[in-house]
Length: 249
Image 1 (cartoon, rainbow, N blue to C red):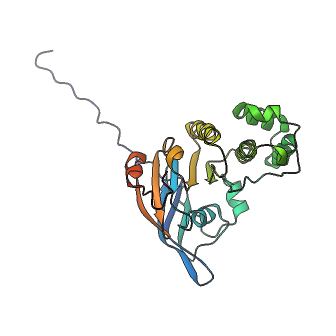
Image 2 (cartoon, helix red, strand yellow; image 1 turned 90 degrees about the horizontal axis):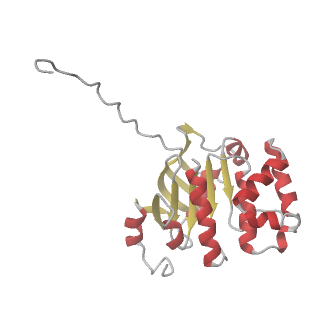
């Protein structure tokens, strides 16, 4: 209307999300040999963060620091802004951290159902754990009475992931998910990883071979000789990957 003016409320301020998991200036050593040299890393809520690099780069050591399996010689580990440096792995697990180590992390002499029953320490009923596991991995439903050690590598990895997710973690840490598995199985597993992240779980995944994980990652980092060399969008990081140290992937 002529002669009148309108005012609008100022836009809401943009609030930057706080990292759910952060490393600040982390150094770590085995005896007198330092293997991490000031690592900085920040994982945001609900993102898939890929840590890439050759064998011996320091990736698994970084995961051990993140999960409380190893204490740094310097630097800080923060979870949701809280300093948890030196906190034991079991206490971090209770706080919402789940790690699936290289080599699966299952009880090979127990059946699928018995493996899931071992996760009822979380207070959940076995029926609920089974429903969640079989909903994500229908193949486990077909193998529920099979001894886990007799299943294929891919099926064992599915079981390891189902057990790790039984705690409803805020952060899921995966070490070499693709190790020893056929490409089609790896692609299937990373499809599940993407769905888990869509549900709000933050995921840190270490991989030596980059192709599949970059397809589901929000950000990626390249680690070489105990240092983070580059961090960025997966497309940009892929352009920097060198076949000389990533096996041509």
